[in-house]
Image 1 (cartoon, rainbow over the protein chains, first blue to last red):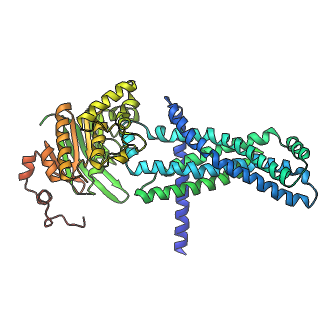
Image 2 (cartoon, rainbow over the protein chains, first blue to last red):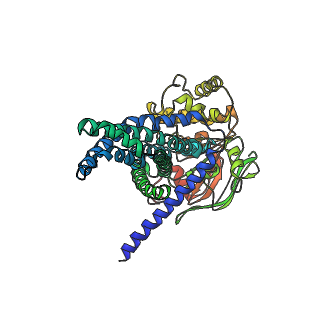
Image 3 (spheres, each protein chain N blue to C red):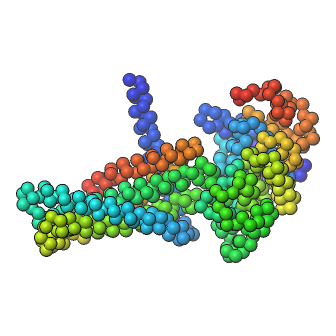
Length: 256
Length: 253
């Protein structure tokens, strides 16, 4: 019994200290991102790494998501003859929910993990200390460009993901399952509102912030050689995914 | 000895339940090489990190050029750090940059020099440490000795007043160790800088030191010129310098 309390207590302490640490890092990041000079080339480099190089996997995942979504809605909706609503349902689910969330999860897997691993390696090989000694603030140099780039780039990826997802849904619905093309498209345009799209984008910007700050935090606090870096990377991905899903619920509840 | 550039007064530092520094005091004379010797894990690196402000002591003072580093604000510290250079144990070069960008890094960050001027200066310091021709190589492509020399080049490029060395000869073969020692002596003379070296390499210590201080159990237990240290009557020091298994220090500690 005592052990259970101990384990449970430790988990709570770990959680609270991580939350505090992440919040602290966030405040520092905000402070350093508004203190000039901001080196644009570092920001662009990160935008390329996080954005451009995630493009392929995001397109792949969202196309198949749109396709399977069309397939599933068709199976369900046919039972009460609502096939005409298929297009709208696919587009709504993608723009409001799946586009932002799946894109953020893919970016976490690709770039969030890389942030934790790279910054963690720099920590354990004293490269972060070296930055300090050379009077270069490591948060400004390492964390700020990654976080800013993620906030900008994840919504852009989400737009692309919404689009390819809708195309995937259209292909399955119209070309494969022979739903009437005009009805499919018209109903989509009729029902989908612009606010659905940009509320989704707003969410994805928040997810971008969360996944990057968590990746950087875990890397920044890595210790204990290669094993420590591995641990930091795993923890960063798991924590970021969990936090994204929780934040998704909270934001959806408030936004929509 | 000459005037002191750094005065460390009674500093204490505790990590968790472990008291690493126990009221350590030490003066670093200006324009000379001071070597701090002591056993692995005895707090030498911790001491070095205090000198450069990476760690703050729980109590005590570290005076650099009249400024107390412990109470100074971050802006003052930033200014002071620019007057320091440091060679890390494994070089701590940035993996993502080639040698010339690594070595020129402090200049790119803190000066308004053009790229051309920076690379000229990089070439100059690379020649000083004997790395001419390796400008485009990446840290992963070169040997440990070369990495240390590149780290040294980066440490001296902005003309610091104090250079810190974290075990400059550890992990190197004897010939490379001697080369690094000669470089330290040579650069110290040429640039007239203050060098603080931490080491457990006795041979190397006596080759480069003007002053030696021995750290044991969180305190400086002996200090003086190399000659004084040779003849110092202290059981710990004698055991350490002689590299003996028998004496007051045991293997567990």
